[in-house]
Length: 185
Image 1 (cartoon, rainbow, N blue to C red):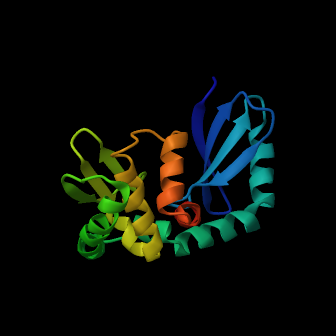
Image 2 (cartoon, rainbow, N blue to C red):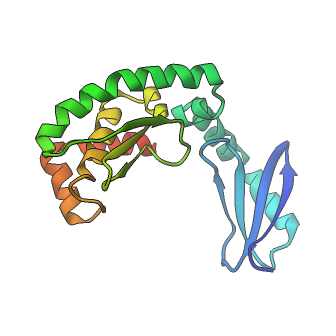
């Protein structure tokens, strides 16, 4: 069955197996929780998967350690109090950033909101001007928060991520790609 999901434990590490129509066995360490995931060809024996994972165990452990020490790993283990502290920081910084960048971009933001999001740094509703900022940005360098604010404000002029949107970012914040890379690391 294509896409069937199961799991195995190899040397104390749980591995989520997804059997699919692929030619090669591939593993990855999921960003937030360090979960190991494997895409496995449909007919491959489980013993081969176990041997492969065991051979890659030094790499797996190194990735898990790197992710655990990253802002993503910190956010995945955060308490309610820590999230509240991040919210306080972000709420204190964003209004000044919005005020700084609105005239540069020629836009006016509506309501500002703050959430602890797992898959987005921000969001914008161009029709209402509502901008939501991820409180986890408190864990990153200040230029990352500024980039996300500029990015969301730019959506008030260009709702999609097309060439005009990127040209607007390039003109307003030439170093935006460096900040974006920091958020993806």
